[in-house]
Image (cartoon, rainbow, N blue to C red; front, side, top):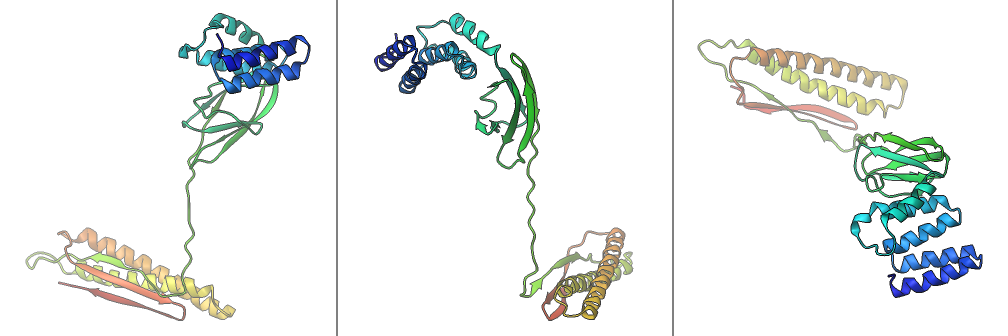
Length: 286
């Protein structure tokens, strides 16, 4: 039997329906379900919507009743009764079956929010063309148009891509320090040549000068007050880039030629700011 509160509204709804007051009857059916959202009451609401020709809401309500039939809270209507009406209204509407590559995506159809996928495996819609949009945190949204006919079930595969965040970091007006750590191995007195060590030291200094020149040129070229000044700082940046490239090549050759792992460090710290620039080399050399 129905709960007393719902039963009162259902009887009133049936009376209004017999009198031909369809909208008022439908409101009473909805009120009964709002008071007691049970499967039997939802089935009564779906049956009433089907009788009034409201096939889309009827399909949604009866489909949900069958989806949760395992709850076993229905004592008035059997699965066979619900399924018979459901199949009749289902033939009058379309169905979209979303398949999303991530769980928890929020899907809207024509701007109407539906359940999160995969909770909503089937979305019933009116026959015709519909705009589908999928949204998920940290992913780019996906949207497309789908056209379905009455009684048609169309599978929609949705592949969402993760959003990659990027940030622009501007040069500050205060001095900025860039540290380059170059490992210099201690040579063996017996058989280790000294040229890899000397090459690495020279390459480290060249890298520091290159970074300082490149960074200083890039900073001050944007603040140049004349074309000639801008050209000068562009040349400084270009020269710094070339020095940096030569230093990297030399450092790579020196590291590849050393016979032992490098314990000590050389720290090269270019410093640059508006109106000034320089480089500092510190460390313990063998």
